[in-house]
Length: 290
Ligand SMILES: [Fe+2]
Image 1 (cartoon, rainbow, N blue to C red):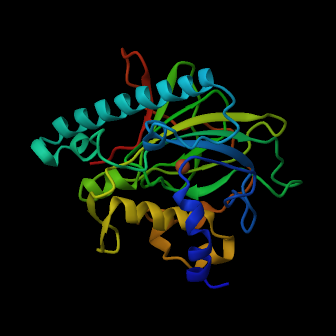
Image 2 (cartoon, rainbow, N blue to C red):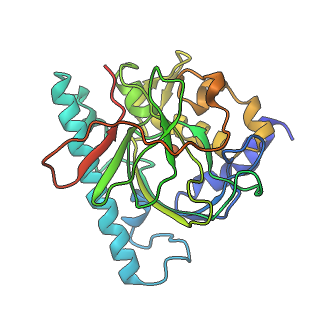
């Protein structure tokens, strides 16, 4: 099946912003193999509807309330960070990043809950999650287990980000990169097994720009936020072969590929990160490069 035909056939899946994805829905950290996690995701727009379409994994109204609170709390946190970055950049009015993320405007902002199954990079097929950048402006990530690796701009090496209790990991995604005229750099990351016997759980809120926001992508194309989301989302779901046929700037948001990026056995080495002190929820990793 051609990449275009594959796109059409899975396009309806893309429209379901709140859904369950079983293990192997996307590509893993091993070349040519699928991922090693299952996921439930709930869209911010969906949960605000009168009769939201919610995956059946969410069993009762108190679970739903917890998710609703998580979405609203993460949304506030993400926008507070965007506002601080806008001020630091001297942006005013409609140009401020938070004003591209108004609450009443449609967006693809989503909360995802992920469960990585125990996996061994030599013995198992479904392992981790492939190297990529996020579609989002900011990703707010909570996890208690090791497994996230980032490759900081200019670095040739991936390193583990240490999970810290009560702290979120904040990554810059493509939408903020584009909104800043490519001044910010999308965080290149992947998930690989650290303890091969361990189940890993993470919760990520993807704060994405309003659907109609116009960006210039890394190819110089003018695309809406929604178009970038749909194109990249399809590339995420595509098979390794079909993904290889997609434009190379999609997966990394135009960030530089490096030949050393191929996943081997993980290194047990945390990345040195500046930690913002004295805040309720500390930011332990911000990929911000001016
Ligand atoms: Fe990601």
